[in-house]
Length: 217
Image (cartoon, rainbow, N blue to C red; front, side):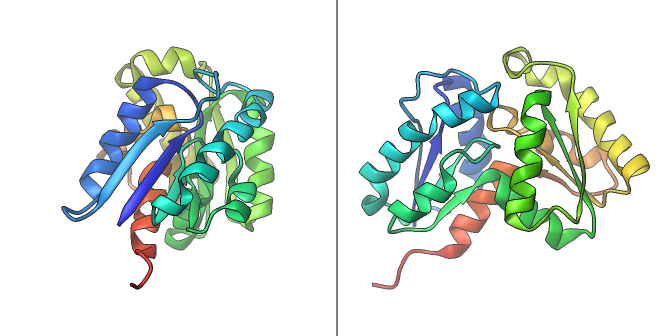
């Protein structure tokens, strides 16, 4: 299985966090690569920045899709996902759509914890497009920028855990998604502290990509 994970931002730290989540999931016979799209945007903090990465994401997909068995787009706004599926000859997975599908399969209701209030409407719109608006209880936004949290995600672990608990207690969420490529690893770090599944979008997308398998020879 040859898997390509395209990080729509140019943050090397985000690449490392995505790689750390994906590496334990792939088998010895699998080959995977994490690379940044040449977007020129270090961290996506707005709807406009997310949209601005789409041409760069598609350029990577167009260049590499014949070389791999599946592609994952590693930003929670799923920039370019629909367009990439039109271009690629292999399956393409978005970490937001994959997380929502996984959560909806685990619980009747799920919540999303992320950063940047401006992205709330975009995430909610994606939930509608993906068919998960019903089970989504809401999108909780923590009061820091991606850039701030990305410097030291472990320092915000308690805040994410508390937000997850609030989503369970107040919203009735039976699963919680931590949304964002730069936030990769936080869900796994706090999963043992929560009474419901805590999902990492990268993990969900990689698991789905691996399950799709290479094409029969």
